[in-house]
Image (cartoon, rainbow, N blue to C red; front, top):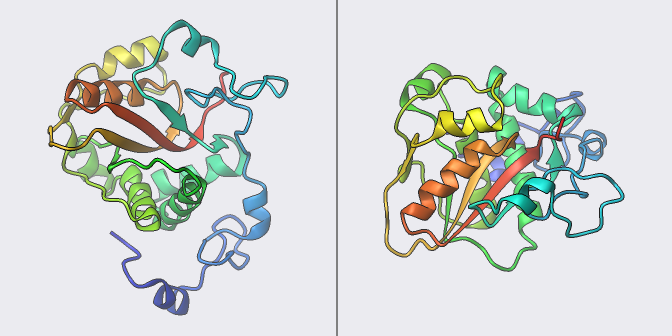
Amino acid sequence: MVYNLPQPLQRLFLPPSCLLCNDPGEGELDLCTTCLDDLPSNHHACSRCALPLPEEAPAGSLCGHCIRTEPPFHRIVAPWRYEGPLAELIRLLKFRQKLAVGRSLGILLARQLKRRRERPQLILPVPLHPRQLRERGFNHAAELAYAISRELGLPWSTRLLRKQRPTPAQHNLDRGERLENLRGAFHFIPSSGYRHVAVVDDVVTTGATVTEVARTLKRAGVEKVEIWAVARTPDR
């Protein structure tokens, strides 16, 4: 894990600079004020799954899918849309191993969550299968979860939730195919006292992954599952 030094020492030895334009970063973030303002917000979204909705949709609206089928999670929090500079940041994190992106996006997401009164007892990053973790060398969701945990002062774990079997790539699959692909892929080690859990991921696309994770947690006795994601992909 990176960035374990106290924040003042981080700023002294590694002064923040914007990962998108190289201008000085804003405060402790590796993003400048201009690029932060350019991140596409997801204010008009389904109140349950955070799917971006048309601008004219009333506050608190549900998308068609959530109206038809109640999801197993309580709510998805995804403050930004997966497009433009936000999509570029996620690509830098996942495919170019720019771990500073995970720290900055985790801090930004935590800032959005600080205003909430009710907080979970535990934060869990969406896990990678051990084979994929060895190939990639890090779990991008864990980088986000670590930063959020530090900002909010909440415990987190990479051991309780596991991906127990590898799954084929999902980018060419529709939602139904993704759900079938992920069925039974995760395992949660039951632990007494965890009634409210937050699951962290970078992007929610169809929602298949977080749906299967939420089902796994519910079967293990967790009563309330929230999904905390940086971004939500608009419905194409």
